[in-house]
Length: 400
Image: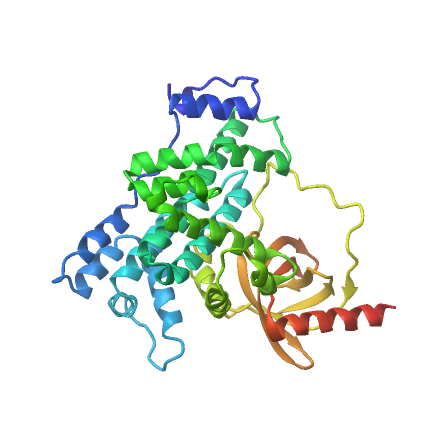
């Protein structure tokens, strides 16, 4: 029975997920054709940039992402990237295949829908995992391409689970569930759905082990322990960087070597560029409608204090104006919307100089001066961290 023929039963979402998974009635996107074609061309030593550009050019979104990525890589030099063939030459075959896979998978993860913000959060997490895994892989004797793919798809089952919950809402228009329930449902089913993806895509055994055991690497087959352990580690790295301690939280992270911590910190400035190269594919800059109601405000919300300085969100956008700062958030008015649940690079024009940092967009709503945006710093470290807390103390003192 097809999805369209399913009766609008009055069951709960957990039962709905179990029934769909049990019947195997789950839509899994096909393995990206362009990525497969690029991987095949990569094995041909006679393949030139023109042939690669022709393959990339078949997908408009991919071609745009490739040019943006190549332009970012060339930003330090004088010569710009003017054509797709130049972009292909700049990136190389391996990077092209990674970008193709990410753009194709991202198209499914970032489509519109009642739970679009939940899916976007999962996709942001997957991209970060892919980037960090690729960075740490060589030191651990793992091929970077394999590590990138593992990071990208290890939690793809969560994206599929969110899609099933959206279908449930389509059959039960009056149904609602809070964010905590949604997260629990996704967590309970994401491994089983991830293994369905692995089966349909005919992924190798090592990737199946990563999908199955990245939450508990000790349970996997010993031969794949290094790969599974790496993905489990990058999961903890992302959690640590999201904490108020920022990059300092990496110092006490079990399993992360001293030199690996420096590699992650050194990579952070590039993370903003990588996320920006995929942000153009996000279907909605302003917040889409949400079927999951926001969580209730905490009983004792941390106080915020008034501030006033320019906030530059890059990409040739007009600057915004900061209005309030708290221990873990900054609020500002912006003439343009920013994508919720996405990492962005921002620059704060403070009296002591320009401070650049990565931040996750927590909220974006229309306001009297364009959009009211709330961001949370991601991976605060070094001078930006000192500047943030100095700014917070000055704002607190001024309000006293």
